[in-house]
Length: 300
Image (cartoon, rainbow, N blue to C red; front, side, top):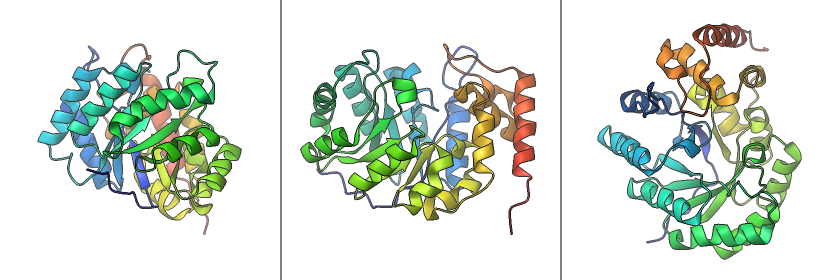
C-alpha cells in the first residue's frame, strides 16, 4: 500500500521533548499530557525522538513503550505523529523505522549516520537507499540536515538523487543548518518537496519563499507565536530573542528548562544521560528572561 502524497503545506510541527524520570526512564504520563497540550495549543503534528526529543539516547524498548502510551491515550490517530530515526547502522535504522510505522506514525525524520564523518554523497546515497528501500511506498521520509549535531551534510544534490530513486517515499527535508544560503538552495532546487526549517529564526522567511513549515523545538513552549510564521510566513519579533536565549545554555537542557518554567513543573528539566540537567536556579533565570521577551509589545 502506497503512502499518500503529502500536501505542500506542513505547518507547525513540534519536535516534541521527552520527559524523563531521575533514572532516565520516559515519564509516560507527562509525555502524553504534553503531547495533547501541544496539539491543543496549535501544533499540526508531533515528531517524537528527534533532536529535541533526545532521540539518539532511546533504544527500541523505550520507543515502543512511548508509542503504546500514545496509542492508549488516543494520540496516535489522524496521521499527526512522525518519528525520528537516528542511529549509525542500517539495521538499527530499520528497526527504529519499523517500530514507528507499527505504531501508526505516518512519517519518518531520518538523520545520516554520524560517527564516520569524512563520507561522500555516494556512500550516503547507498546508506540511505538501504534504509529506505524496505520502506518504499509505506511512509513519508524527510531527510534530516543538522550538521552541527551529526557533522554530516545532506546536500541538495544528494536529496535530488534520493528523490529520483524513491519518488513515492521522499517527501522533503528538514534543514536545521541555520544557514539561509543552504535553505535557499533547497528551495530553488526542490521547491515541489516539503522544505522544513528547524531554525525558527529563518522560518517566516523560508515560508514566504516557498517553504512548507517546520519541525521545531520551540513549538513545545510557545506554539501560539509560531503559527503565523509556520503557516503564513509572518514574522514575530519575539521568536529570535527566545532562540538566542535558549542558546545561552546547551540547547536541549535549555528547551527543557523553558518547558519546566512554562508548566511550573521542575521535573521537566530532567534530561537523559549524557546530557546535563540544568539547576532549578538556572531554570528560574531562563524562565524569567523568556517571560520578559514574551511581554514585549508587538509593533503596531
